[in-house]
Image (cartoon, rainbow, N blue to C red; front, side):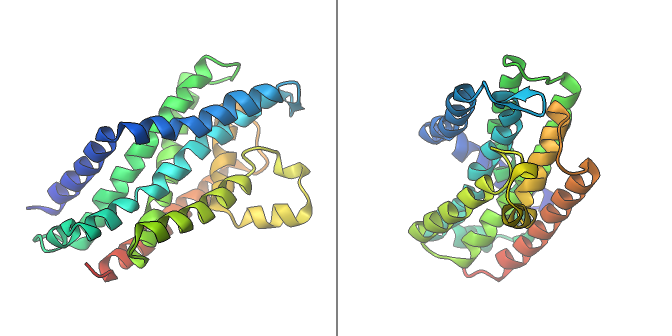
Length: 248
């Protein structure tokens, strides 16, 4: 079996697993939709940068929709380990790097499916989304999702139980979201909060997507794009090393 074929098979397996879990698909949309329509609609009278709050919030919700499903994709490693499937995969005549790549791409694509559906809502809301900004947003979402999926695989490579993974995932997801500027402009935040947010890679993802969709940005787009690209590359590199060193 070639390395590329192994990547494809692992990627396809992750997609099939995602598609069969209908409850996961439905539940993954609940939180973004609630934030967008309840929080965004409830504060629609608030104006930020010339936009109503729902329009300002929309790019942040798109980015938020990627976080949970990207990071949680690492749980498939723990499931496979507990049921002995991972051992069978690891003894196959392919490198662990190919297996990691397949799982990371699987997590990326499943997150992208959800994010793309949320993004499509922009055409039906008062959001200045165009076909070109839609495609550019998808490209940014791929970069962000790959990095986050790699983080999920790093966590799964270091722990052994589903319960521990869930605790760490929840501990990680909420700070990433709330410190990213998804819900408020960081320019108006206290100095300490802006400083902490600068260390959050999702901050730059939210800012880049917001710039592409509505043209508002707190940071130069070139800086945001560079940071999220470097974050994804580093996460993929570290994830590959961690996956190669894990026990089956």
